Length: 248
Length: 220
Image 1 (spheres, chains in turn brown, orange):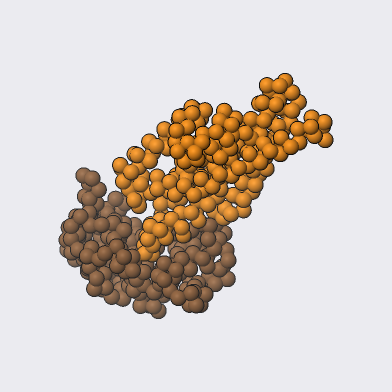
Image 2: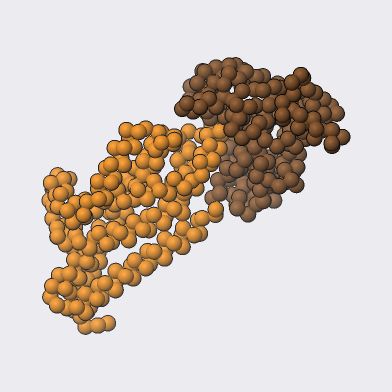
């Protein structure tokens, strides 16, 4: 679904992402974990070209993003949803209009707007909030609106940048459940960046550990919920294992 | 009504009309040219969508130069330019030229400042949904910054009224000019005070309207 090959990204002198290659399979929930400054958010932004790589290639669903024209890239982005830590909703628009933006930008026929927006709001369980403004919602609700907005244009991938990092544990669980059903019911591939071990443990099928701009290791989860570990476990992996065990 | 106002009734209405024309044209110029200019100023800033150091420096310099001129000198300085466009440098129509120039620069700066307040993340979300620069300006930036844009325009309009009062120097007329010529220079202090009162009412009304509108449209 998503393939990065030897991707580099630098800001001035600093290498934010160096020589990262990875492959994300269709239909999985793929976690990227690491300490702050590890380059994980940059890595995620390379997947819809919000950040342009200095070297290497990014392929999403068969299209090499760096080869696309501006117009083609904008079109492609309708198929790559994204949600953010700060939700990034338009505060001056209602819940309905926020979701509608996504359809307008994707140039969907006007006749389908009402139905599609309500369908997406129903999916995240917020159809009764259609005329509210973001400031009237809780953090978890805002993130669910953001999910509905990202889903409206029927993406095949959903990129999540620290989607639960400004939420409390209860709303975190609520948002993770929605993400899980996005993956299971709609078949959307989910890429999730986080620094919270808990989030990875709850929903990710595979995890990449990032440190200093590179992929430290990639781990498959076992059905038991305990992460399988290769030799030389990193600090993160050890922590994952400890948490897994204490929860078992 | 006080006798003095009755006596000068027609001149007063005339001067109010002149002020309306001068301020009205300034508002139009501010919206039609100042708004796009301020938007461009914002977009060409470092880190923004149309980042361009040269464009930003030039626009920034032009806006600063216009705004740092003492307004009276700007009016004089622009006389050849005014003559070129209007055909004369004297009268109410001619007065709208320097007023429009300062209006554009004034509002452009306030537009830029309002747009800076739009959270970076909102623009990022728009980009991630495949928005073009035009989409971002009209569907996101102006929507999110709308109460700031209205408040900025309110502040600008009040400045335009103040600027318009000195247009008497080029025969522009207006309430300020009337107050100076008939009130101050002819020692009719009472008349001058009434004129100041009229201006004060206008300013209050504009500020009240602006603040109210800005509050109603602000859902943040």
